[in-house]
Image (cartoon, rainbow, N blue to C red; front, side):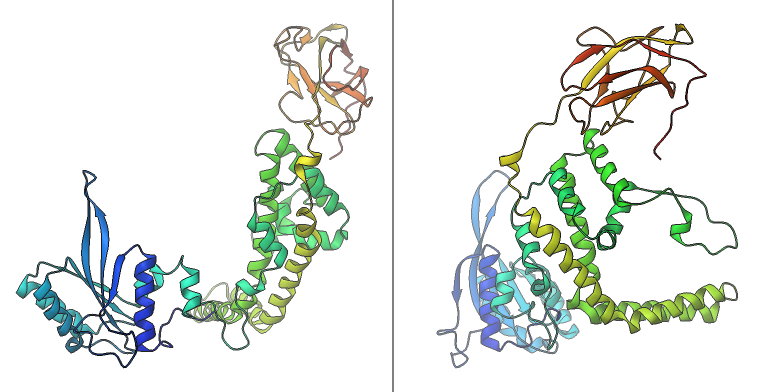
Length: 459
């Protein structure tokens, strides 16, 4: 995208831009000093615009400041001679502020002239200067003004604008407050081609799963994948999402919103076709840096040469890579985001099933289990490693409590009514099972033997 510039405006258009900007900034009673606003208008007598700005004292009293504004449209620095007229006029009428707006900048002699004027004349009015960087900052959140005067947002020849590459479904997703359930999201994701799904969500997997990494072996070249401890997969990602919600780390709908926005932003940033030249320029600066380090460093030359080759390849393939990343972004929009927009969360929303609670006695080898014994329940769809499952005994030979408000072993998750629940005591399978029913409390006495079958894990 082209940088902020006002050079394409003529003098009158620049004055109109300044007039509209002042209105956007809250100035009132804005009046032209030119009669018609045309290039052929008579002299502006040293200033272009007169306006007022409401101020509030610390005691709440409101008053208006009078501002004299002169607009200077120069592609080079504004010279001192261009400033004498407004100072003469301001000296005669004593406004509160004199504002000089330059489409580019004031020359150094002009700035020195203003400093000398203030030091020598000590005027009652205060002099302010807005140059191009100030105008850029003041218009950042005023897209309509920028579009009206074609200042930014219009691409260079052959270059798309950032807004134009946003997918329509992405815009619709941003437009409203989108609420989606995890069940609905995973019904969509389950239908995707597994390879394509892993490509699209690979980075998001890592954000949610938070895999651990071991220390690299000294002197051995290893990839991040080789350093990672444990798997990163769609199934683990899916299970992690449900565990995050069950543990009340974040609301379900916020988690879905986070996942979708992370994925959208990741691929759009990598596939930003509106800034290919900027991306290549950044990589060229990186390349120059590593090349300079190669000339200076006596050690690690092989590693630096590898980085240089990788950077050169990235520069050479940048347009194709960015296009490929943009296609992934489009795929995600068209196959996931568009489907999420169709969910009517309130039409199908239902509260999650309440847990089945258990308590009772617990024995190991025929004796009361000691305090600190772990009791855990498992089964199809049962969530473990969460509050309430497992629990640790705090009383000799008992787990949970018969007290309606006491601690119990809570069996919950995406569990089907009538599912078989298996119990473990200190990771040893107990001799009892139960049938799961939502919102029930069951006394179940457990027994386990240290010679019984060790618990098998699914990991």
